Image (cartoon, rainbow, N blue to C red):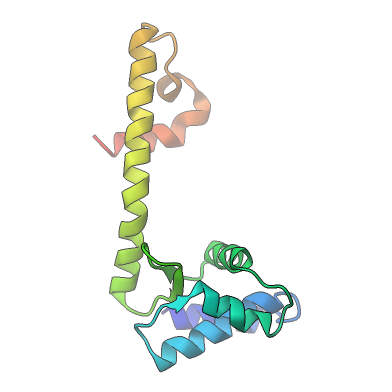
Length: 146
């Protein structure tokens, strides 16, 4: 499925507009066909991209991957190493989501603890999660923790 999404993206996005994204996706696609389990280290991606764009950096690779993710392309990373690959197995997706859960759940729990502390110490005069209309989404997320 990810390859179909990438192919549609490449067909519908003029490469002249997104040269860097196109180059990176083509390289990741080639590498996944050669070795489906292999994660490409950031330094390897920087070296490859430097062949086409001068002074490429690991920060640029990270930003490019971030942008591709926001464009609905599933580039996964490894939680313990600076590596990337295109998701091509269910376990890639599962590991990627599990990695994010390790950060998201504790963050939500800290917000809930802080809000409860503020609320109880202010006799509920200050209760952002319950009283601030900008916090509706956060309230919905926190209700899922209980």
